[in-house]
Length: 318
Image (cartoon, rainbow, N blue to C red):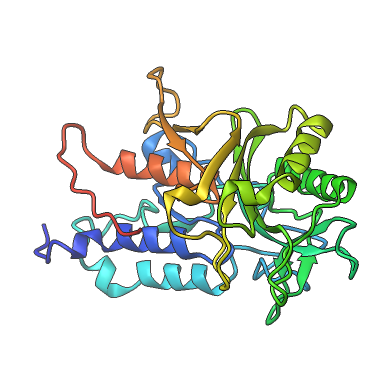
């Protein structure tokens, strides 16, 4: 047995949470015991190369090749190999890969939530919108229609938005003039159905200020892709800053569909016959962009808790 400050024992788990929630490409890390030691196989990444056609110009990812060979992973490995961590273990002579850093999800098609900026397609401004990320150091929107890390439903939704805004002539927000309707969009995938919870962020103070332009857009989206949408929401943001969402529940309006996206909370035992719990998300609720990685972290945390133990959860977030 080793004498240590209570917080010392939590450091590996706290670092795990730090890595998983702050990794700039959102590829979640987890700690993993070897599959032989627990009799359950981890869902590890089947490949390490993303191979995205937009890499190099798109600011979204820091690597396109070996995702295990980047600084944040190397930093985690150095931490868990450090003498200060090794000396605190009661089983110093045993190495069961407990401190191994792994990528628990696939490296492509894992992102089930995306927030994208909107810009006008041309100087005319009434021939539709383009969607993407801001280029580095600018507010020029770069389109990423074939993003390799997006869930396929997100790429389909973005194309549907581009087509619909062109057809009904939706005006994109012009930050210099303060005019135009559509500022940002958020796409969230319900994994069990593959459907999209779509949030349209509009340059308006309240719902009535978006009409009739918004209704024309949502009608066209539902007409052109009736099976793609889980729900549609409006968020009103008439602020002058860069914030995607404005503060206040009154800014949100459900336009169509169910109120919640439902996601299963994985059990600690993948082969258990017990029913999983459910997590309920609205578009205003924080959720991980990589829910497959989140699942693996949740399973691993559950495995580390002894049966019948009392757990103190240290919540860090907003």
